[in-house]
Image 1 (cartoon, rainbow, N blue to C red):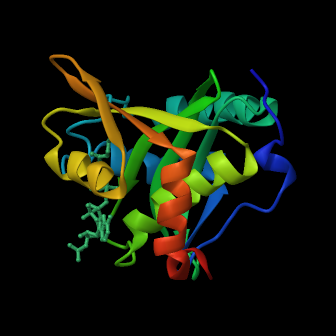
Image 2: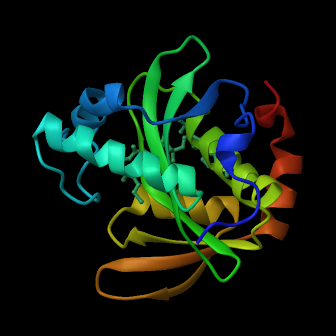
Length: 184
Ligand SMILES: CC(C)(COP(=O)(O)OP(=O)(O)OC[C@H]1O[C@@H](n2cnc3c(N)ncnc32)[C@H](O)[C@@H]1OP(=O)(O)O)[C@@H](O)C(=O)NCCC(=O)NCCS
């Protein structure tokens, strides 16, 4: 579904120490290096080691991006060093999901908070959604605690995941509290 403004039509938001940019085919090796690293991939879906498959997948993603139905971002520091990935998808019922979130050891200290703030800024302020829905593996305690601390509400669970909602009202509060991180 194509909704509201397309993120491809605007300058993507930036924060104090990172920025988001759209994935490119030339990021295939970087993405594979993260997704195949056991430090990061424990709670993410497995990917093939085949670089050509990864490039093909990115090409397909560029189509979703131009439709405005999903976005895959590379997280970069302001000096251009890539330090992670994050994705927005499943736009429905005035809500969006986000995930495929990884930050590597090149991340600035506040990159995790800045990523969440940038994704919520894009989803709420730019795309105009009312809320965000996402799941976290129930054993991924660090990430569960991250989302709970920021104000996400756990709405259900199953054997595998906890399911969260984060509202635009909560984003308003967070963007006030962390305004200094949203300023470049
Ligand atoms: C998910 C991921 C990107 C989060 O990044 P992270 O840097 O580990 O995030 P953290 O929870 O450590 O938060 C970073 C810092 O922000 C701080 N922070 C987090 N939430 C905060 C809040 N609401 N207020 C103030 N500080 C906060 C943390 O205390 C931490 O500070 P510290 O480094 O001084 O301890 C990273 O852990 C990762 O790549 N994990 C592997 C892949 C994965 O599981 N992805 C999620 C799938 S759902």
